[in-house]
Every structure is written in C-alpha cells, then in structure tokens.
Length: 373
Image 1 (cartoon, rainbow, N blue to C red):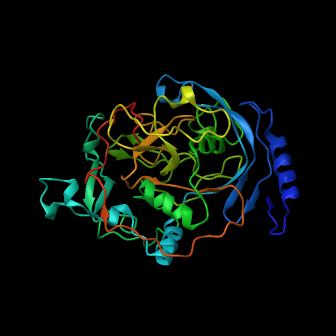
Image 2 (tube, rainbow, N blue to C red):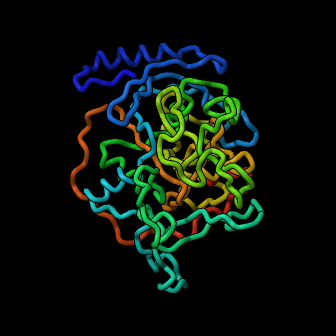
Image 3 (cartoon, one colour):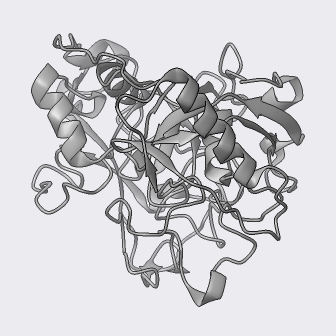
C-alpha cells in the first residue's frame, strides 16, 4: 500500500493518480484488477476514469439505459461513517438528528400530540412467513429509536462504536459531511467507486454470489424476513471492514447499510444524464409517491437478499424520502482534495421535524421496488 505523504505536491499526486489508473485501464470482467492504493487517513484516492453506468437487467428499469460516464478523481471514505465518528461530530457541534427531533403537530392535523413522539424505523422480523409485498410486516416505527439508540430508547451503542451509524436522514448525513469538510458522493461517483475498475459483472465483486464459496458482503441469508441464518457471520449490522475491500481499497460497498448519495431520485434520469461528472436531476420525482422528495441510496443492506430487495447487484439503484431514517441506512463521504479545513462552529438545528411522517416511507415497496430496504 502506498500512503500519501503529507508533503506530496499536486504534480506528484497527479502522477500517482495516473499510475494507479494504468493498473486497471482496459481490464475486462475476466481479468484481475491489480492496483496500488493511495490513502490519506481513512480516505482512499479514486482515480479518474470512465465506465458504463447502470444495470442491463429488466428487474431494474430505473437503471436503464446503460450509458458511458466519465468521472474525475476524488477521495472517498474507505468505510461507512461509524458510530464513534458520528458521536464526535455530535459532541463537537451539538447537532440533533431528525429522528431525535419532536414532530410538529401542525404537520399532523388530527393526530393526538401524545402520539407525536420522536423515533425511527426499525427492522423487526416476524416469527413466520409473510406477504413480501407488505413491508409493514417487518418495519416498525419505534419511539426513541435514533442513532444513539438503534433499537429503541433502552438500547445503547456499547460495543457498537465501530459499526456504521444508522437512523440517518439525508439532512443528517449532509450536516456531518459539511462539518468534516467533505460532501456526499454523487450517484455516479458511488457506482464508479463500487465497481473498482471492473465492468460487466453481476455483483460488484464478481459474477458469483459466493466467490470460492465465501460470503463477501453482509446480506440476508435464509427465508426473508423471518429467518436470517447469518451464514456470512452476522445477523444484523456488521462492524465496518468485516469483509475484504474492493480493488480501490473500499470496504462494504455492498450490503451492511444503505448509503445516501447527493442526487435527487428520478426513475427516468438515465435517459437524460450528463456524460461527464453527472450531478443528478434538478428535482425529485417518484411515481410511486409523487409528493415525496427523495434522494438516491446505494449498495443495499443486511436485509437484502436474492429473494427480496436484491439491490446490492451492480448498477442497481435505491431511493429514500429525505426525512426518513431506518436502522439499515447510513452514509460515507467524499472529498475533491485533501486538506480542506473542517467546520468548528456548532450547528443550529430545529427542535422539530418538518413534514415528517411517524412511520417509515415504505408504502411503495414490493419484491422489485426501488425503495431501499
């Protein structure tokens, strides 16, 4: 591994980036990708390049058409933001996440004030087989659930410091990124990084779900949603870096927790996407929930499987209402350059949520829905 010297100049950095690119330029899906990794802290340099974005799979109509995209180089967190990292942000700034804020009675006319209590969506598997078109069978709104209390007010983060922070709404992820002098990745950056210089594969790691008979991502094994047998070693979230990195040196780009991207979500966007560093559409539209504002989520989570919500497959897309968080939703950040000064002033946050429903926005979900699960 080549580690970035703090005194490395711009010219040398560009040279390293070019050399890194040469390692994988022209590789096909059947050729191993061999490259050197440039790191700075817990960030990895992703060299510039081009790739075919999307998925040539009728199960993912919003990931069509396939289109060539060119990406300039950037830095990316090697793993999802952890509970320990997010706790440092909160202690420094006093930030309160959306899941911790009170619900404004004006947004919920007719609902008794005593029922408008802070909380978030928690995966709560039933004890028996259920209709897979009814996510309410395994999602529950738990009062008191938040990043500090992932399963409700009685749960804690003890022993979970190195796990991805969850119950993170888009605003929360963007606030952390700004404080850290970073930003959220675009959808194109995220997919380019997840592919690791490879193309034409069913999964980001290859064409076999279990290469060499091994599980390489934290996903659901067993009968969904009532029987996760944990063949990959985990029932629920895994600590970051529990599985091997991809060719860029990035961990957990598949499974574990969904990750926010900066793009608004539209199922028709790929037909009009820019070819160079696309930033996403100017607004959000989901025909399943026309009034909801949604952003893209990528990577799938620990409750995705080939039986249900198989959107850890390469090129597939997820989506989420911007004010909704769940215990399988987190994020990671990117930077255009290293050395950006971080924020030091406390964030001013509202004490109430704005137009946030006290149940997860999962009404559109079915076996082939793009709604993140």
